[in-house]
Structures are given as C-alpha cells and as structure tokens.
Image (cartoon, rainbow, N blue to C red; front, side, top):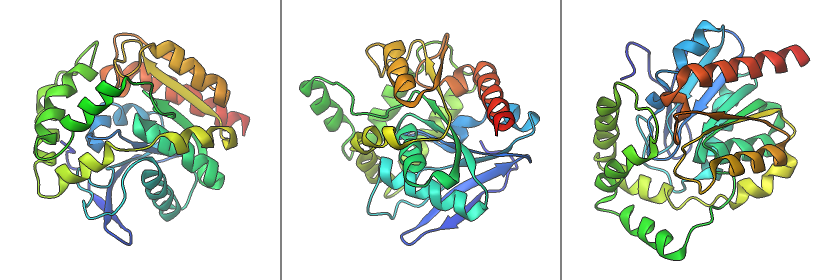
Length: 272
C-alpha cells in the first residue's frame, strides 16, 4: 500500500521505527493512531507534497513495519520516537498526530519545543476520555490477546462514520494482516492501555502554534465539537470541524484536511 516509496528505519535501543519520505520543503511528520498503519495517510500525502512540503510518514512502534520488540507503548513512548526521528532528520517539523498520536505530539512539543514548529491534531486524544467503567472494561477485554486483531478489525468501520475511502477494504485487510504477525497483537494490546494523562498535563507548556481537526461524526467522543473546542481553548488553536468524517478526517476528507493543514503552515511560516 506504500507504492514505490522506500521504507526507511530509525534504529533505537530496543528496536526500529519505520518511516517513509516524499517531497521537499518544510518538514511535516505524520503519525497515526493506535492500530493504524502509516498508509492511513496515503490520500493526504500527495496533497501535501504538491503544496511543496517534505512529508515523512511513520509507523508507531509495534505497528506496520516498525518492530514489536519494545518494552513500553503509548503516548509518551510515541513522543520519544517522534522526537528521535525529527532529531535524526535534522530540522524542526510540523507534527500531524491522529488520535493517540495527537497526545504524543503535545508531549513532544512541551518537552522538546526546538523540534516542533507546529501541531496539527486530528481526532485528538489529549486527555483521558470520560467512559463508563463497564464500557472501559469491555474495551480492555476486546483488545486483549488472542482476539485483539479480530476485535479491532470488526470495530474499525465504526470509526469511519461518514464517508469511506474507496480503498477501505484493502486498507482494512492490511491492518488485519499486520496485527496477525507474531508479537504485533501483543504490542497493539499494550498500546490500547495508553494513558493520556501526561498529554493533558503537558498542554499548558505547549508554545507551538496548533490546529485542531475533528470529524463532525467522530464516534470516539460524546460531543466531538465540544472536545475540539476544549482543546482549541487549551492550546489557543484554530478548530476546523470536518463534515462527513469520523475519527480519520485525513483519509475520509483528504482535500478538506490538506487545505486546512497547508493554510495553517503557510500562515505560521509567514508569521515566523
């Protein structure tokens, strides 16, 4: 699903992080949510490249082409991986983080401001969700081994409330197959236990400009607009609500998402 783009690897102490690079210009790093592959950005990347941006898409540890040999997973671990990758590339980035990766991006911006030129948070989890204890227990059971891959594959279509990309069936199969490899279901299960508390505590320390993109139909939030506006107030962000999109506006409405990101970057580069 990644076409002819070369897969590159960043070696870390416990394993490798996979990424790919396209285009040239100011650096944009795209980080997916849990259970996702970097190819979740497959429809967004061409828009950003045409806008004159250097685009790097990364797989989370324990996902896709990255290794599943790490001791820790979740927001803070992802923040450290993103920081190591940006430091390796050698220039600050606009970090686009979806879902859990939005929390990781916030942590990175707070802890290593020199690495983060701006934040774009899509379907963002940047604080612990308000969930009924029974629902939380059910989610924990469903995402436990050995049925985590099957449960996630069954649940994934619900997160796409709104328009489905035409290649959704192919992408869904790729996600399922990736999770079935030895060690990856375990890594995914551990990632689902991510604590978003560190991201919430980091919000006040973020100084990078930011943009919040939320699907109007995002089923992960009781009131998507209210959650987006809360984050927008906390960060001083502009908020864009994306119609006919659920948890993945970057793939459900790539044109709208790309326009918002490019406009944000152009504004911030001009201001800088």
